[in-house]
Image (cartoon, rainbow, N blue to C red; front, side, top):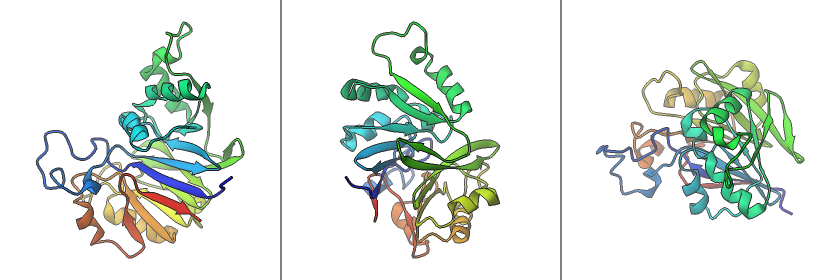
Length: 258
């Protein structure tokens, strides 16, 4: 049994992904595979079990690309489409593992799932629909069969969003502000992942300067930027402007937490 944490970046792009449909900018036309970004999601692996944070529109592609054969649970950060739209494809794991999928989310996410995937929760469900078991969570620590998870509440403009801390690793996406008491829950993380949409100011996301200020406050050993827009620049361009302990995440990147 391996009790080390392994993080796989399934997607590192913003809501449109990169390249953006019908865009001819230098980032969208880049030949660097690291500039191809599916919608943001990670897979956390611990004790031979996999946990995915968010099932965006690219969930099926991400599972196939990563050759993922087993999935223990899904944790949702919030209810926006680029984070929930792919949930229908959990049915493949229902069939393969012969069990319902455990889902951990807030009440607003549950309400969105019931609207978006009403057929999943119908009293007279159609054969073959996804089977999920929703576990409602609040802003307090919980465990998934002994695996500890600490939610971190951040604000996405006016929308509460959950980041998650798994042991010494913290993942935050779609953040614009983080309250002092929530920052205190992150401190001591060896690795921090945080959204950095672009260089210019944005109403609901950290831009680069804000993300770097946040990292400077938290003081992790290493930090990675995610939820990247094509307006930010290429992987190579962004990396040139970063401190030595800050990196740009890319699809397929794996971090082993020893």
